[in-house]
Picture: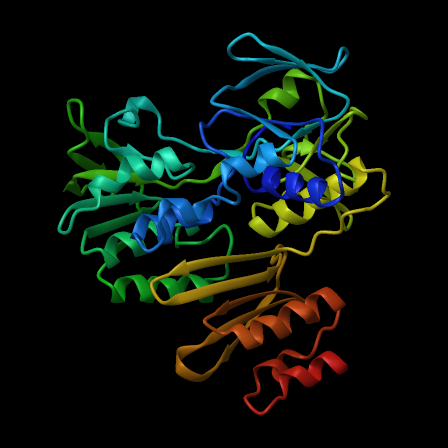
Length: 398
């Protein structure tokens, strides 16, 4: 398999648990065994999770279970006709089946507007997190470009560590691509309450500095003095190898419900892969999807005939708030707010009369009910959901 993230780790674990203890090779450009990525912009950057806890397994575990790790080398080509993979240092490996778990790449700023200056960081891998860690000194001035979840998580860490944080979002509101205005408003208030200067409908014109970034010019005419910048403007699936192998691409590497690509001997899982869902296709950027999809591929590699039905769920940690999301809100027509105790809150998305998604902020009980309702296809009336007197668990028996 190629790629050493969450999907690769889940795939290997499932294969080993199923008795496959020979013939597994992992090719990974990073010099590390597979590790967790979500904590990089949360607990690891905050300093509450040490490096060792990031790794799924000790490196020695892989050899003990017949897994060969080819770390620190990149796969540069896949010849589907001869079933061979060429590595960056010249080795050529054959395969019976190949799994692409190549993940996604963070979008970057063009060099023409200062994207190549030093102290301009992305948050993708351990090297990125380690590179930016020294910049998180109390009182440092940080600019965050992009008001999605990665940008907001980085803002929460920076503000919690006493930095001066400005976040710019070119769209009308933060989280505009992924959440309702109600959820945007909740997190806007949360961050401003922690001292983050959030500027919506404000783009970055350019970063300034001779070699190291020292400033930023914004579309509202503001010129900021900054010590470093974090860019969180989305990701793109890593399909370079798949494209070179002439696999079908459709918002990522197109797979069938078994995880197989357009080549019968090549599979894909995780952020790089799109899969059938309802009447179309979906590519889900989440830990849950990477695990579930990879485990389905592992079962099929071992001869089972198992199909994958996505059940989307996500999370984000910001300050002391845990956001949990279930379902996909695409095409929602209304949002209904349920308020709980101690500041807990949940937003229920409906398409017509159908419940399709929930955003829950520090509201674990209602999140679990909402997730189960969505998966079961049960859609209580919005007035029932938001009524404080409703026995939420009873809705599951409807």
